Image 1 (cartoon, rainbow, N blue to C red):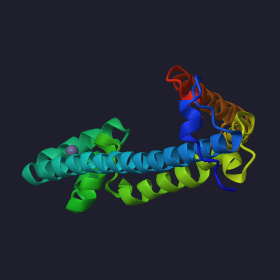
Image 2 (tube, helix red, strand yellow):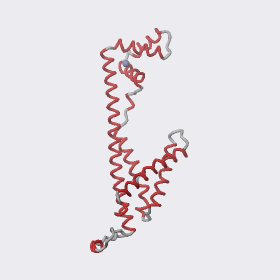
Image 3 (cartoon, rainbow, N blue to C red):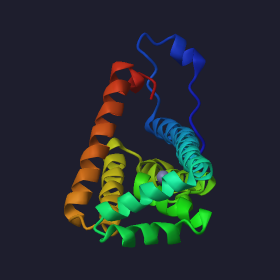
Image 4 (cartoon, helix red, strand yellow):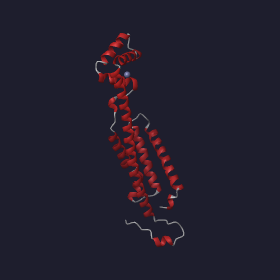
Length: 216
Ligand SMILES: [Zn+2]
């Protein structure tokens, strides 16, 4: 349906702030919702990319430091590993020394064992920042943020329908997330709804303080 354009003449002659008809209001909310969705998705994706990238760079620094130590002081590192094996319960100490010496026969292998035992890191654990960014872009834009805007796009947009759609979406997301953990799905759904509710209340409160309702 075509939007009802606000008439400048009617607006000028009216003493109260312009109140658009419901169809225009619904359109404004749909447009605001979609632009929020796009900007949110982009910032989520970029944030995710930067975060994973930084994590990988930090991991690389640890790998380089350990590799450097192994090159400069292989005997010291082997002795360190042998002591570590002993502290893990390898007895007698000659067994721990043999094990450390076998590990150190191969530098790459030694690097892995040192990283795993000293820092709890694995060089294979590098996530792809691009995959993380795309996953977060898709899940935010096409799954998360579109749900509360749907009623406004379909044409029965009211605050109540938006809240209902958003609430059902949050509960479903909480249930789905619990599939990958051993959490109670109801507790997970409840937590998701609570956190979403806090975000909605904060957004609504800020909008009210800024007088958004007068705009549409
Ligand atoms: Zn080491």
